[in-house]
Length: 306
Image 1 (cartoon, rainbow, N blue to C red):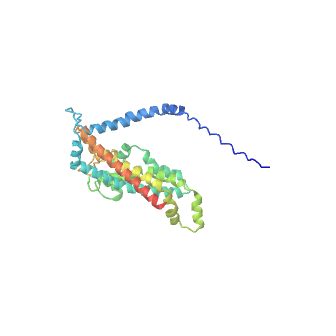
Image 2 (tube, rainbow, N blue to C red):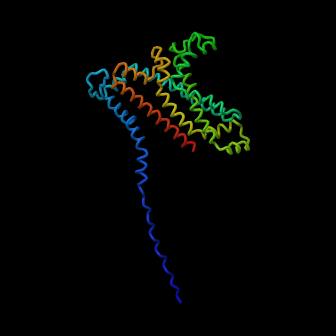
Image 3 (cartoon, one colour):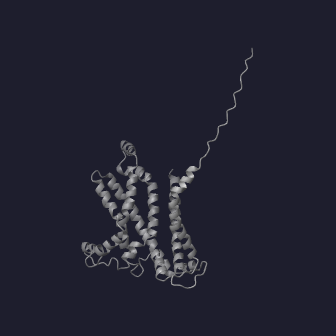
């Protein structure tokens, strides 16, 4: 007797779950205050500044008219703009390298200490919490004075730390490193504490030395943190203004004037807001280019090492 095998029943179509969009409306209500502040105080001023960079806006009065790229053409032929931009780039190079390296060294030292870690963390990170005005006045009135300053008194010299064009930029960099290295130190310390301990234990069993652990485990696992710190530090250094304006005013002989201070002087002393906006957007373009270049460079390195 032939046995009839029943064909398998067709699988019932699975109903797709209905997507509910109520959460979107609620989410927009929650973020609406932030979006409003973001648009009013960042997006709108940014677009307004870009529009003014193509005009002859003058806060002292006069004819406000569209001038196209005339402000940018003038900026690229302005020797004072180029010198201030050169000072900014010089400060960025002189400050970024020690801030990254010193932040890493301090984090490694504190991470390996077994006593009073809280005191070292507070000592290294504490200055970063102080306002730029406090730091500037402290170094201006106590560290750098040629007659009674702590630095000349300790070294037995009579150097004009902020009055000599040859050393003024170095003095500002020294103050900046002392003031802001704590932020990089804290980022590196947090990254070090997130590295699994079993990696070091396995390396110790294999007979790896401390240098081998640093070179093969610590530094590779800190690559992403280093990328973040380098990008943040480059952007922060390119935007330098506060401490230089308070300590040297851009002097002596314009040897420390950054491009932001030059834009400030042109806009609020020379009353040429349109030209100052163009100078500001040149700096903005430089920051974007440097940031994208750094991200691409580190991405290529990760692709090579992975």
